Length: 448
Image 1 (cartoon, rainbow, N blue to C red):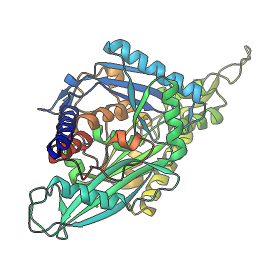
Image 2: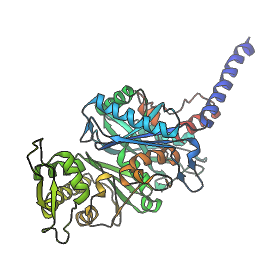
Image 3: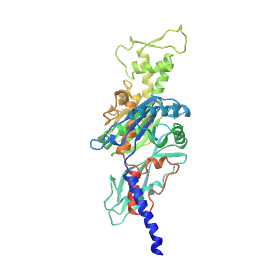
């Protein structure tokens, strides 16, 4: 009787192990990245064979983008318009790729992005550190996360410590009595997260995760040396300007301000009494945040506001345009600098700045950033995606490319994106009663 009763349990355990291994070792699915911005909505699609681990490059099979609708200042203000823009961008990318997308990962810089750090520590004993010990340390740290009214979208291990010795990249197989971990928790407002989910559902897609735009932009724009030595990646979007701080190869802080390139356009429209479309065109063709030669004598024309056929174009010196743009750009970067300073962001003394995002393409922005931050500054764009068309390879598409980088190369997060996107955060990463094979399969599936 005992043998008969034990047999179904053993068979069930074997079945669970086989299913766990199949899920862990199954080939990766098509990855669809959507950058939901205030200026545009872009979709990048990558097939499993688009990842080349030898030289860490990516190949997209489909790209689509449309003008953003229903988004203002990094927040959704019209659900129907925003969902229609997402559906249209995804459909365009699907047509190029020749695949059907079921779910998407959304990047956002809205939702009052914030970051905080928590620590966990467990005892080990006189034996090598194993995966289960890493899980227990992470679980200990997760238990300290208190986010009332907010949703965690990234839980990233910053560093491990063995017997108090910090800076350990991978403690597995090391010996020690205690194991500690420090996690960075990036979160957004719960209401914003739910609105994003509803928006994606209205586009007849599944939400596979929400990511912070400054984080994924950095993954696409920064070199590994910059992450190791320390760097700040500033993503200048249409509705917001956000920053991610890296130190020792890990993300250590995220900050955002609700001011972006669209605010510059509105200032131009008000200052020159022209339309928003006319102001955007003037900004793109003639805009600059620094003085240039002969700008007092060079005149620019802007279409008049309204539909009066008898009204002539608005004519103004280019110096007036610079006088409108420069104060707003400087104010935005100063506001971000002060936010980083007040938050105590751990920026290395020699850390450089990398500017990316559509608003960073404005002439003179790099020079203003050098003056405001007093650090070396370079312009960043998607790297290691060599087959992107020129129209989709600029700084404005860095966040979309970064989602693909994250899916292909990491970094490994303490909790899987799908788990964070679910309704409840699972406090027990692994079932302690599961057999070792199932545990290993679950760890590989959720975290690698």
